[in-house]
View (cartoon, one colour):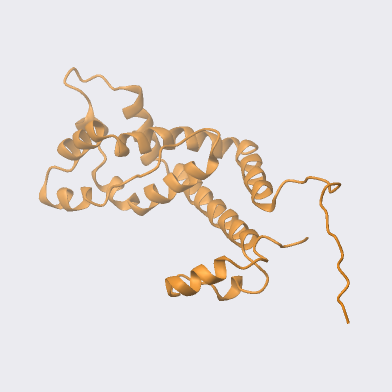
Length: 191
């Protein structure tokens, strides 16, 4: 018995955005519709920039964390991400970094020590100080972090396949993970 060959063509199929694109846009719309988060992201830009850039980070450490305990805490203050307005994911990752060093920032951050020699406050220093000392800003960072977690879970699910995704974990050997990542059913999750 010869199997019947059936031609399959997607030439007339409708094009729709992928699940990852939909998840990203939904999160972006959520941030855009929440003025508290938008304002918090503006402050996050200044905080992340101060910590990420070498001159301002060095100045922060030298002036605000100069004692032995401060030196130990300063080593934990890190932010790898630059915050872009149009990429809420970058803001969420920066929020995660900032949340990891929340206690260290609260311990040593001192606007008066950070001021320049003429005792003039720069706009960035005032913005950083107003963010780090504001409980509401820290709650907004927690909200961004939670939003990032939910969207990452949705994107991981949409990138997976119905046959292996539940079995894939970070503890798998690399060769097993590569085999499963080549599954022909990856991203084939129909609504």
